[in-house]
Amino acid sequence: GNGDLAATMTQAEEQAANLPGASDESADAEAPGSFASAAGSFRESVCVQGPAWLAASLAVLGPENDWILHSGVLGSGEALNRELLVGWAAGSLMTLAWATGCVQLVFTVEQVAMAFPSWSVLVFCKFLKLSAGRVVLFDGWDGRSYVRRISRIREASPTEVFVQTRGDLPGAPHDRILYSEDGSADWLDAKLVRGTMVLGPVNLKVVIACFMAAAALSPTFALASV
Image 1 (tube, rainbow, N blue to C red):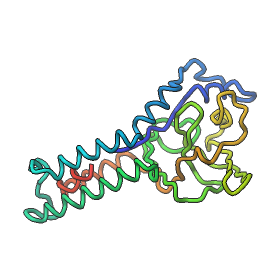
Image 2 (cartoon, rainbow, N blue to C red; image 1 turned 90 degrees about the vertical axis):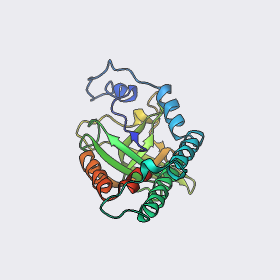
Image 3 (spheres, rainbow, N blue to C red; image 1 turned 90 degrees about the horizontal axis):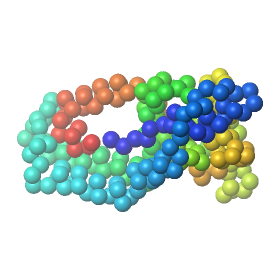
């Protein structure tokens, strides 16, 4: 499935450890820098998503698709074709939402600045208006994506909006070190905000259990939507 692994510790946050009042832990870790940016661009490129969707569609809708047609609790026979089409449509819509940046999925691995439990899923979308207190996903200067809460908003003009963010955990590093390489930027351009959280945190075990339940009810739908 599509997802975006939330950054846990980067050179930006390590530099924040050297700011007055901050701790100096993890100062020896190494950041991926431009590699993270290149990997993210590759993953989200339409040139990658398009062929991947086409290949999956041919495998699901092509003449040799007997491997995906399995009877489940919801039905068999002709009903499998309907489940196949509904599953393919659902998967295609999700791929389109991901490729256009309308929806982002984030898997949390470790608590660094936010209090979300490890191994949970967060869902972000770009349709909500930015406001103080909302949790957002944004791109840092190092090419990685970060989950933080908006603390302040400044509107220089209708098209120029800037935000300040913060972590929820006590002692979290100041986020300004994520806005620019030298930490001199006090505000983040809102254009770098990729989405506002609309769902989460959802435990990863719950997500897996829901998929297994769907697979039991309709294996064809579950496989076609992946």
